[in-house]
Length: 107
Image 1 (cartoon, helix red, strand yellow):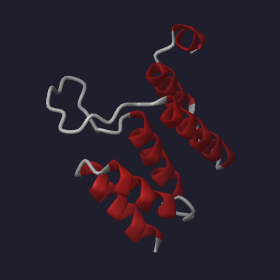
Image 2: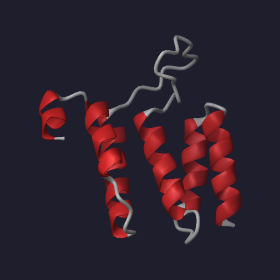
Image 3: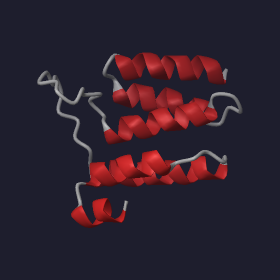
Image 4: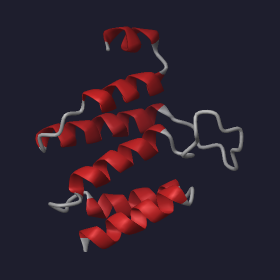
């Protein structure tokens, strides 16, 4: 069942439906095979909810990265660490998303 939820989550992620994607990926995150990938995709959604390209000027709905999103991403990183995944790049992405100079200088 984890694979189905993971696929549905990716479908919703790339169709710009972040809430639905998070719901499906949350179910998949407890799967032994898809769990780590589901968590990484959830972090990506929390840090970039509108799935914007860096140089894209088309934004249909303004989903901003909030402090709550950054906190949720940090909690998911801790979950990945327990699973033995290298999270150094993801942690740097979180520092960038926080837009706080002191966090960036720490990285």
